[in-house]
Length: 168
Image (cartoon, rainbow, N blue to C red; front, side, top):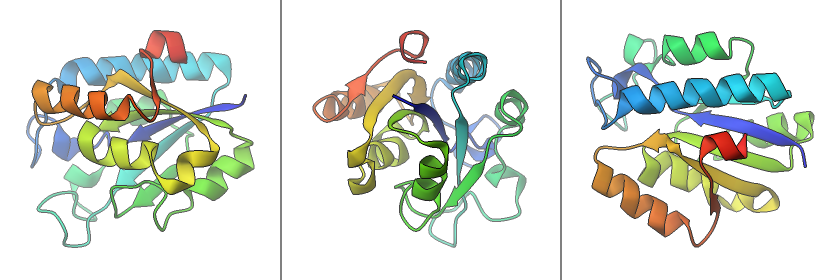
């Protein structure tokens, strides 16, 4: 199988000082950096998925620093393609499928922000059904630990949940 690491919405607004800071971002950021490093070492392509709002949320406004991908994530994978989305599902009205097809990907390793929203919707997207999907729980977060754990439990019936050191 040919893997790709999808890094969803690791954007400044979700970190301290942003418009909507989430729970446990320091640990998740460090885990994502390690996952990207492991992917780079193994030749696994990394794809940044970036949410840019079109008035639907009070954050991630186009052209604002909050919508930018976190600089440490960009530094870890500076040449990775960036797929811009406006919906929770990273496949919805984006070139993600074409990007994955161009790379010959058959397996998705999914991580990122808002476990119950963008991570879940991308992982169980109709378009994702043709891939073997694994979510990296240690590389995901949301507004609280409880909501994160509830979302992971719900996802566990549809996709594999594997810690990043074992999956990448």
